[in-house]
Image (cartoon, rainbow, N blue to C red; front, top):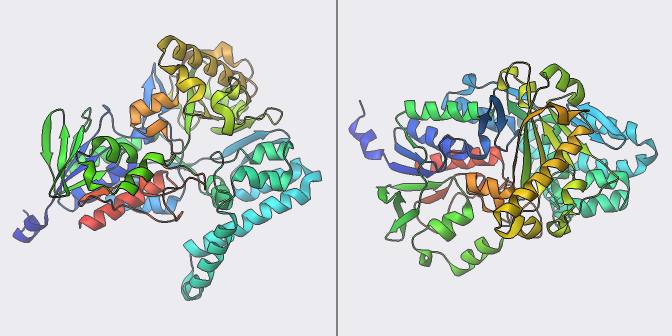
Length: 501
């Protein structure tokens, strides 16, 4: 039974969205005894960190892995669900020209690059040498060890800021061109690393994260979302699935609750764990509360790139698929084909030229596909407005474009999995329009704001920004950080929980 003091400190909280940020915030706040309701437009929780089954095959909705595992695991232990989720490392099979090998660390990746292109040692030294400096600066700043480490922190921070300022306004494409020369095989590979035209200052940290600290969930991301949803309910939280929020209601210049399906739900605090642009430009009932420059910035700042995903159900046993992929996650790129993302929206052959990622959840757990069969996802970074917004609203043209893209992705995967076409039992394709429809993320953004240094929303790459111009309205998702992703969503959720108390 709650004491009178505890009842006095209880708050009514509404959270919009049941992605990793919303579920984490909901659990932490419900654990403190607050009355928490999560509104989710879809019929299952998870958002981008969810998954689905079709004809017995399990597929991830979009997110395949996460980094910064120490932060993620700490939050799950704090909630009390860490032991209920089976996290596993996500290794990468890299296939790009002469580079062909499985890498489970940044060190192995460097060895593969040097062995594959010995004549390019000087150029690789230039690129990877700078990446090494970035990694050392980041590691020293984020993980100081002992008294000496803490005493040295100001100097390490200065070193990190020096490296960041040196490369923060240079794109990864331009940095790769400077190191390898445009048109070279290594340029084609390294310019495609990470998000298109992301800041070169992120090269080192991204390489270290994707190769040394990349994790997934053995039974699929949906199992993680389900564990958090069940725990949230057990703590007394209310999860309203299939209930989209129509408006954020304000009173006396502060968030006062939300309106959903014609009903008003009052709250002391509202946490948006959903799309930033829609939060302020579509759902907020009173735009006059927002400074004009804020509205302009929200309207004009670009979001991160979307993806297309081909979902394939295969009559191929996991052991046979594993012989081809060599790891559950593979990256394939033909260096002779160079996709230009900067002008890709008007290029009908863009997906023929683009690199692709191949992922099979059933290689982690055979129960994620029917017995003796495998699921396969093929992903490529996609221009959100490709070919006149994917057909300009013409549904027949949209279907034709989808089928064409699916054929191109299957053809790429067939270079890795011989005879792939003969094993396809089920197939579908998700586009940026699909992802926007199911996640509400503007243009199907996969990682909140753009990673391009020339179109930033926040000034710092490390800050977590949960506050908004509207009192009692917080941001509890990856949109709180310039660099999105699962760790950013969880960090924002934890900050929201601390702020509310």
